[in-house]
Length: 270
Image (tube, rainbow, N blue to C red; front, side, top):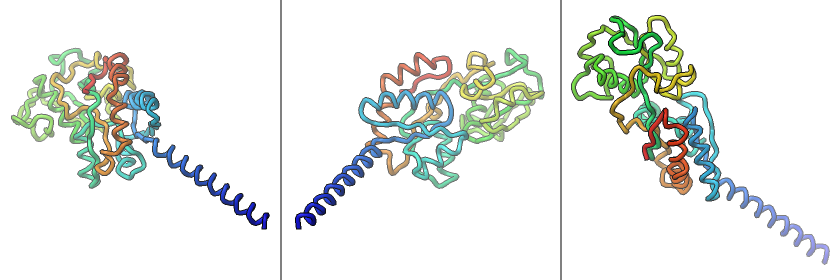
């Protein structure tokens, strides 16, 4: 009888330990926030936010990917809680194409974008009939064309702004030729023969040793729709995890990091 009682006590004790272990695992998991991102400085910002969030008991984990699709797929498929890699028009394009429900929650910074040239130092030097490398996705193409319109190289249909496509060009005095290139490959187009101008972001142009100060011209008027955004889903945007992530991403520490470490390539937008 005593053995039976002792056995039951032992089983109960083991069960209690197992339950405590499971509870601990669930609790730890509840404090993990997975953020998908692609390249610096986005990945650097996530790491800095992780340092901040750790003080409040949150574990922000960076999930680094290699292209401009995976980070959205991961959030949409609930493999990540959020992403930090894109502007709102790019996200909206993904939603439209994939029937997804991603939500832009918080602008973090505006990248200094513009055009680069290996052969020319001013707009006046650009020869007639030159090739201009533009991003092949519509959201970035429109922004690039708006910059060309801004500096007077082309004229766009009035009011079209950053929603422009090459079909909206009403005047092209230098008869520039348009070369659509995937955003990730634009840096390579810089060295292509006959390419006079290449649009690019600091993140990608840095691969060939260039920075915004090297651009032949930069965007003058920043459109805040193109701020690099913290993105989540409709179903988790108000969750405790995402609110904690947003708090860390907009913390004084992250702001100081952007201003002190990346002022040459971006402007904070919070």
